[in-house]
Image 1 (cartoon, rainbow, N blue to C red):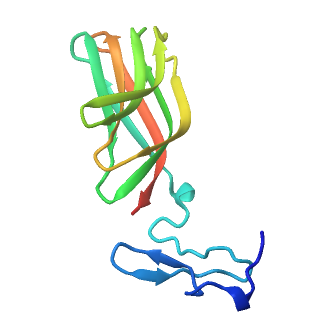
Image 2: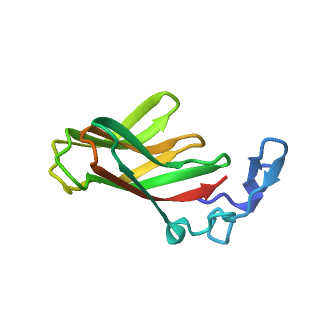
Length: 156
């Protein structure tokens, strides 16, 4: 990376960042790398969370199983989902995130056998109000539906 000598440095001679109210000087190390302080969630992967839900069907049909709603002032990073009907064959299983009135499905399997786990891994950033959910289509009365999701929360 080319260097700018002090004799020809632009003014001001510090990197400025706008915080929404005022400009603040950003700190650089002796290699020119930006220095930051991580606040609230310095090592989010070390503090991952497992959300788990179970439901026993009353009657036959479809069922949404919600396991986590993202709190205001946070971002939830969804990293995996797993769902299954512990009792019988299910018409289909979806997993994903509900934002507003829209379900966004990232996991799907048609006709999984009893206790056949439908899995998804990746990275989805969920904002306040998003709901992590699974949908079980064609479950029977008395079927035990299970859903878990893992991820970590970033504090804004």
